[in-house]
Length: 108
Image (tube, rainbow, N blue to C red):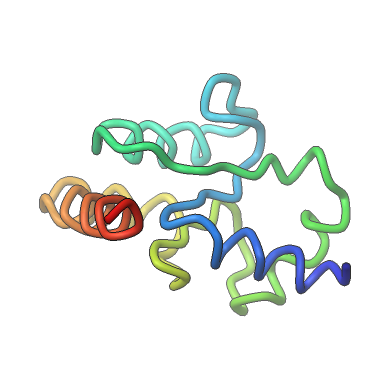
């Protein structure tokens, strides 16, 4: 499978997915850590992709949604943004609603 198809598959098959440096349990970047913590604080399951575990993802993800930095958070197949946007949405109470709607909608 082509790398762009693999990225697209991860984005579309998971209601919430974060492409990050490391994992939520062992982040390898402060931005990735804070974004994953905000997602975890929403109380719903989310998928993650460790960009360091797949060089092709690391090299090509910025082309996927024309977003140059990591982490990248996708909800319902749409790019939400990176760390700053995610934290801002969390502080406003919006991220919790977005994550709950995506996860609960996928389950139902």
